[in-house]
Amino acid sequence: MIAALVQLAYVVGTALFVLSLAWMSDPKTARRGVRAGVAGMLLAILATWIQPAVVNHLWVIVPIVLGVAVGVPLSRVPITAVPQRTALSHAFGGLAAGLVGTAKYYLWLQHEPESLTRFRVGAIVLEVLLGFLTFTGSLMAAGKLQGLRWIPQRPVTYPLQNASNFLLLAIAAVLGVMLVIHPSAAWASGYAFPAVIGLALAFGVLLIIPIGGADMPTVISLLNAYAGLAAVAMGFVLENKLLITAGALDGSSGLILSIIMCKAMNRSFTNVLFGAFGQVQAAAASGEQKLYKEETIEGAAQAMEQANLVVIIPGYGMAVAQAQHKIRELAGELKKRGVTVKFAIHPVAGRMPGHMNVLLAEADVPYTDLVEMDDINSDMPQCDVALVVGANDVVNPAARHDKSTPIYGMPIIDADKAKMVFAIKRGRAPGFAGIDNELYFLDKSYMLFGDAKNVIGELVKQFTGGGMH
Amino acid sequence: MNEATPALDYWSMLFVFVLSTFIGLGVIRRVSRLLHTPLMSLTNAISAIAVVGAILVAGGEFPLEIRVLGAIALFASVTNIVSGFLITDRMLKMFKDPRAPRGQPSKNGEAAK
Image (cartoon, rainbow over the protein chains, first blue to last red):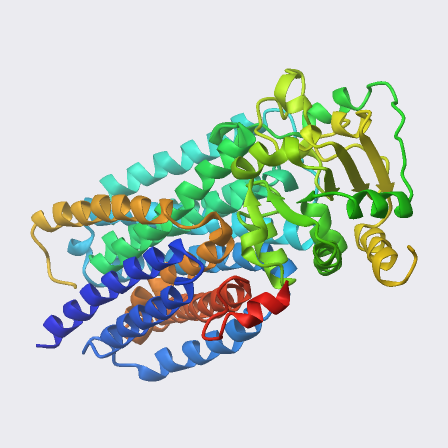
């Protein structure tokens, strides 16, 4: 009876999870999606808890209470910290999968070795590998995003890096196969299994070390897919179809996001994971020095006020400078004066998929003003002023024609087609990819040097503080 | 869960995996690009369904060290569930459409312009 109820609850839970994601197709129904997800999850937890095999209720209650105690504050982080929170939760997901896999292996080994079928051991090995490499990899990614001092921000590369990483993974794979063949040998449980765990932990760290900030959106998506696949593997181990479905939904989401991110950079998975940007920097930075043209705040404000269409192109620099609220004020002032203001969002602007949208939505920019790259580009020739805030590579026209740049072939926002370009830039150093941005040296381009928040604050003052007229 | 199961079950699990991956690909492809960040935190919370495995390991009649592994996994999963759903909802609340203020007459939307 209970078994049937449990299965029924799992089926309903699966349906709720699918609905939850389906409702994410539109901002209007998206919150309903969250409620469906919560309902599915509560149902699954209750259905699991009432099973007679669960006898130590205190062992269930205490971790749940602690999880809630940590989870609630984690959900209140500032929106700028969302990428690192996301990476951290991938880490937790990987950890949970790895630990459950480890527990099941040793449990079956000690109590019913006959349960350790090849299929199960294979699934456990996959679960543990994916789980633990997601754990350390995501922790490293979270640390990089948080800007922890003891984690190098720039890509770290060394000779034979890829070769040694592959070797590590190959050893883990060989050990995994040996475990599948002899699951309960003394060396298997004593050495091979712990070695697989250790290799997975090490591989996760080494995988992220060579990856730079601009590649973070892809890497976070990829880690998302790994965390989902680890849950799928757990589903195979526990023979639980709800786990398999939910994990597969998460895995396919991570996969789609990774593909979108890769396409938006015109790079392949292998190139992101194994081709660090690091080497290119030295070579490209040696180009000749070009001169920037500067514009005053007053001049820029005047040009924007007289425009019909102003397109603001935000990048990660906007998040760093926390300039999104000032930008909304500026957009508001311009709109009051009859200027149309749109925001052009590049898929890889920021540190995770959709990063800019969330930051601007938090600053009360209506989502109807947030326009995707493909949709805004056809309007760019009609744009009077393009205002680039903390974005760089995503507006560099060199991506279209210069085969020597690492960003060659990457789709960009056509800021150079606007009638006039203002770019806010903190300093005169080249962008992340270490290359000068051609956009800044066009005849119609003018620089506004300074912290994005201050510069935009000054622009707003031109409209509000009576600095003009 | 612990009885030996016929080999057929492995095949049905693979079926479930393949089919749900395709459902996932179909559904996720339709998700608005605006919402990719909340999408990731939502799928994150959903994949914390690993909580199911963790409860069985932590709450079962097992040796202490096994239950400790389960309890840590349970803690990690619940953290993901709670923070994942809450932050997704928090972010989604921020996405406002000026043309159609929910549950309010449209004059508010006009005033915002």
